[in-house]
Amino acid sequence: MVLMDTSYIFIALVFVLAGMVKGVTGMGLPTVAVALLTLQMSPLEAAALLIVPSSVTNVWQLAAGPALYPLWRRLRTMLLAVCVGTALAAVVVGGADGARDSAAWSIEWSGALLGLALLAYGVLGLAGWRWQVAPRAERWLGPLAGVVTGALAGVTGVFVMPAAPYLQALALEKDDLVQAMGLAFTVSTLALAVMLAWRGDWHAAAASASCLALLPAAGGMLLGQWLRGRMAPALFRRCFFASLVALGAHQCLRIFTG
Image (cartoon, rainbow, N blue to C red):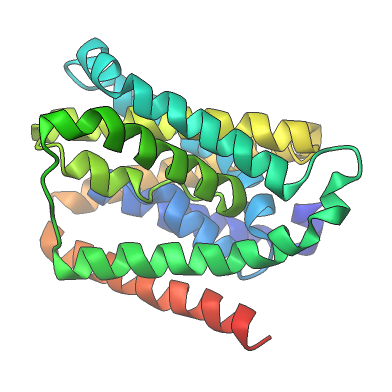
C-alpha cells in the first residue's frame, strides 16, 4: 500500500503545496502533486491518490463559472477524445488480468513521459508562449488535443498537456477559461479513475487514502486563495513554471541515467 511505503507527512505536505498552487493560479494541483509524489512512487500510484482531491476541486471550479452548458457544447468533442485517449493508454499500459506484467516497460517509461510533459509545460509557461486557434480549426484540433491529453494522463497521471495550452488559445474570457479548465480536468480525472479501477489500482484502500489527501489539498487551496490577493501573480507563475522545469529535468535524468 502506498501509505505504508511513503511518509504521511510527505504526502500531506505535497497536497498542501499542490492545493496552494491551484488556489493562486487556478490550475496545477495534479501537475505539482504527481511530480512530487513520483519522487517516491510510480506515476499511476500517485494518480490514484490524486483522484478525490482533483475531482472535488475541479467540480467546484467548473460549478463556479458563468456558462457551463455553452462551454460543454463547444468542448464536447475534445472531452470525448480525452476519454478515448485514456482508454487507449489503458490498453497500452496493461489490464487487470496479468497484462500489466507484459507491459511493465510502459510503467517504467511513464516517468520519462511525465518529465518531458513537465519540461514542455514549464518552458512554454516561462516563455509566455501563446497561440490562437481559429474557429474553423477547433473541429479537428480539439479532438486531437483531447486524445493526446488522455493518452498522457493514462501513463503519467497528469492531464494538463496539451489541454491547458489549447484552452488558453481559444481566446476565452477569464472566467470562461477557468471554468473550461475545471470542466476539462474533471472529465480527465473521471476517465483516469475509470482506467485505474479497470487496472485494479483504484480500490478501497486507494480511495480511502485519496479521501484523506483531500484535507491537506483543501487547506492548501484556501491558503493559495489568501496568498493570491497578497502577491504578484506573475511572479508566482514564473516560480511555478521554473519548478516544473526542474522537476521535469529530474524525472528525465532519473530514467535516462538510472
